[in-house]
Image (tube, rainbow, N blue to C red):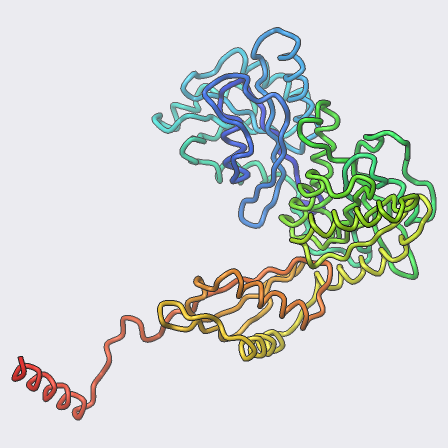
Length: 467
């Protein structure tokens, strides 16, 4: 099995009302896909992150194929097959209670023509014998079917283990010879490609004054001051209501893959529009991924003093929940402020891969505890004893103690801020994990000395006489 830096994409296809969206929600552990007992409910593609063990993937939900012969249904079917064509593998969902249908056979024929790995998931089998439920579906010629029940979340992990078994393993650590991977992310027409061109010093990316010029994620390797970088220019991610072309829905998936493949994300915001809801949504995707972050407020040139003040207020108000990322006000077109982005990218990358020793992390913890003790819980004080590093990109600090499940949010934020300051972290999320150690005295009978036994007997006799 080969290794890859790109998260594999898995498309879910099938007839209407076979349980595709319910499977999508199971795989992404979300409720993002609309689910109801009504065929044809899903029309647009929807992408989400999933994971089996240490294997991440992107899963794409699609509309039902073969709902009717009208024009809209035909577009939905074409869009679903396009998703399968662009994916690394596909899951054909069929209804185990209905048995094999002509529609299933037709979809299977179309999928075989794509030359993709296709896995058959026989859904709604919770009340059926597994062997009987999947027997008919061997005739599709797509390999051994897998019995699942999305409504009860049965067989899901087995299915995904089979799907991922033939796909490349994502490389968790970066290749130091390749350089720092930087994804340039943002809404359409905020100047991403212009910024990439300015950063590398040549017109490598197509730029045009119209949204959606970039359709795919394009990696551009280059070197600056002896340091290697790979800039990933991504397609603009629109609001879901605006994503009405199949090729643009694919762009969203490519942008999500670019985030996963990157080590640092540069989010580009249009200074003239301020921080929009979609900017905040993109920030949420970056935070969920744990990637280091630099924020570039573009098109700063040409703004009046009043407009600049309004833009700063918008950034301060809407991004107050991201206090670790450095904000730069730039003009990609004229180059002002762009050079400062590289220093910020380097600091963010270095912070995301910091490796302090356990002794250093415990020393910082003790200093923070001495300055501000944890609160009391049920009359007992939370005790935090030692810390060690649990991961990188983003840094994960594991803190051991007792009653750690009761650490309040305010104290967690105090510890996080203290570690950020002590370790000089900038541009990267920091995750704290608390673990409670087993009490060695719990459920252990205490052995009493003869003097303690005699004292306890005298106390019991005294208590009986007074009673």
